[in-house]
Image (cartoon, rainbow, N blue to C red; front, side):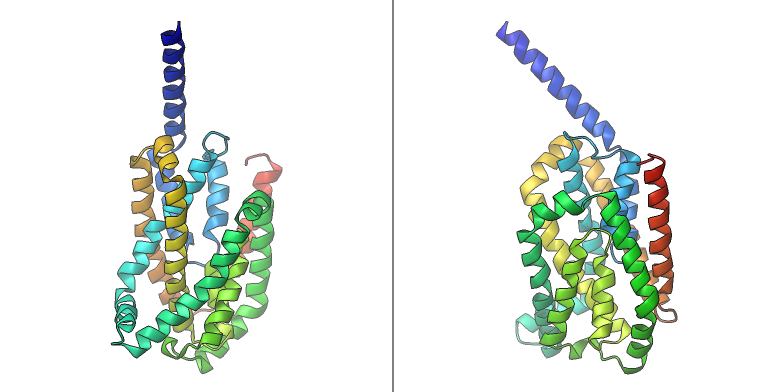
Length: 299
């Protein structure tokens, strides 16, 4: 009789595991990777897009798979991290030389990046549970999208024009500038806000030029995403693999890397001639679409 009970439990566990892996299919993993790669460094919020996309795809909407799905959407950020490592390896090498005292500019940028990282890191650890409990929902994301979109339309053009005329290069970034940019990054803990949006606009506001603001946002994102990915992978990585296996997360990683490379290159080129207005209008449009999906019970 005891063996029969164990056999039933084993069969139930295998069935549950099979259902969970079916929930995150290769196709769904690829879609989520594409969404992550495109949205991570654009000022439109990757977290908000992933949250809504998961609902549309019915991934992580059940108690048995929610934690694993949340871990998946965080760990596929590794693809976006690798994109910055590849595209900005010269700057990162300069920062490494700065540690050894062989590159003053690299050391200055490294110090600024470390300083800017601290505020959001501390706030994120302290308020992690409250943020997940209160803000990881469709309506908080909609509000953040709209507020951010309106802010971009009202203020970003002025910051952009001033930065193109008077902005300083990244090598001249100061401790004060870094601290203010880091303080702004705290706002991005609200899903839908966009870490890239607040850090780029904050960098423009404190006096960096457009190219420097975008690059510093990418470098700060490299550090911030690396820490967040490693933190969550260490805590929930086994649960992720037990629930979804290894293939789907790897597929998501690859797609996130490829599309992050494309998105970064496009953004850098686009901002050479255009301001941020397109992102403001996009945020309002995607918020309106999400409201429609909620109203029709589609998500």
